[in-house]
Amino acid sequence: MLFFMFSTERFPSWAKVLLVLLVLLIVTGGLLVHFRHYFMSGYQVEVDSGVESVQLPCKTTVCLPVDTKVQWKNSKDWMMHVYQNGSDQPGEQDEFYRCRTEMKRKLLKTGDLSLTLKYPTDEERGACSCTVYSREGNILMKKVVMLQVKVTQVEVDSEMESVQLPCKTTVHLPEDVRVEWRLSPYTFKVHVYENGSDQPEEQHNRYTGRTEMKRNLLKTGDLSLTLKYPTDWDKKTYTCTVYSREGNILMKKDVKLQVKDCQVEVEEGVESVQLPFRTIGDLPEDATVEWEKKEGTRWVMVHKIVNGSDQPDSQRKSYRGRTEIKKDLLKTGDLSLTLKHPTVRDTGTYRCDVICDVTMLRRKTVLLKVKERIQDKDETVDIRNRSSSTDPTPLMADQSV
Image (cartoon, rainbow, N blue to C red; front, side, top):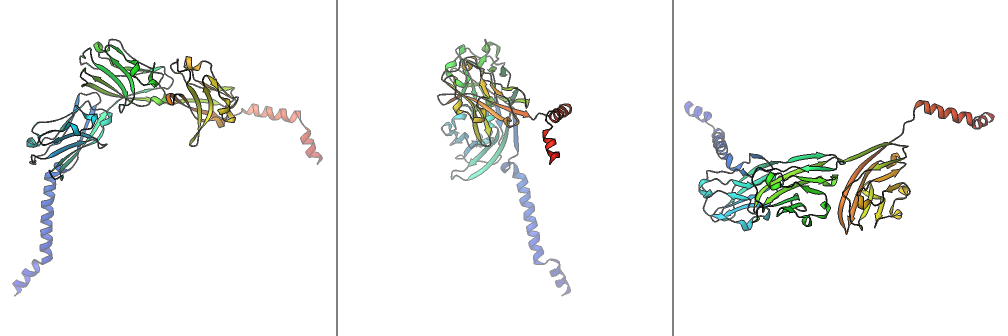
């Protein structure tokens, strides 16, 4: 009887349940550790912009069915690559990735679902996901690869006459290639070179006359672009792409341009201050030039020119008679604004827009700071002495009262 009571006390039911739960936790934890590389995203890949390709790794030892579907997507949910029914499905790709991705053969047998991405750019940075679906559409596996593309950065002052966006290659380029500089993500054409010469008719009109590439660029491999009179409006990422005659991409590189804000500082009391803005001349004769100042969330008109003539009625009253722009500004490209008798209230953000047929051709921002004038002690004393000696009447009147 005593032995029976002892054995019952030694192994109570709650202890058995606890023991089973503990064993399950240990087994589950072991399985999670064993299969963590199937379900967790811990990959990070970093490359320089301009490399020929980068591999986004994704491997598994799990046997995948023949009817499995594999999808690669970028951080914007764009379809990078689709594999299904034993072959690639280029028709399901986003156009941005056509002919730029590749997966290995017999990937379901080897378990290597890695994606090779050709000519990675700044646009691809972020989380790229590989998702494996069953025939019924259930997710069998998902992994995420963080892609970092290091982009060349160029910084320049707003008042510089030009800046160079570097792009060089040691690869021998055929004579019939096409070189395109575009704004990322591939909207406006900044500069086009083809058949041995520039193609100015293809570039966006905001860059007309402002870009230049070196001669014999295909022989030297120097595809750098010179951008004239950069402003804060040009602070963007530019992409240089080289195409073969068949339209295949031979090379691609990003360059990020930083243009420092133009800052002007004067002391209250000066006769005038100039807000500088120089650009390429020969602008359209019917272009409109507008200088505005930001006040709160609104922009108020400081000076306006239409068809080469000032429009004083468009100005805010506080600026009438105080602003001036040089003549023939559209021909010379000197759009600088002279502001007369600046005061502390004129401190703020100004911008100049050149508009033609609703198209913005140029824009520049200038930060103006007008400091309050601090009088010297000697000057203050002199002013007080002169005022007291020249007009004693107020003092006498006070005494008489």
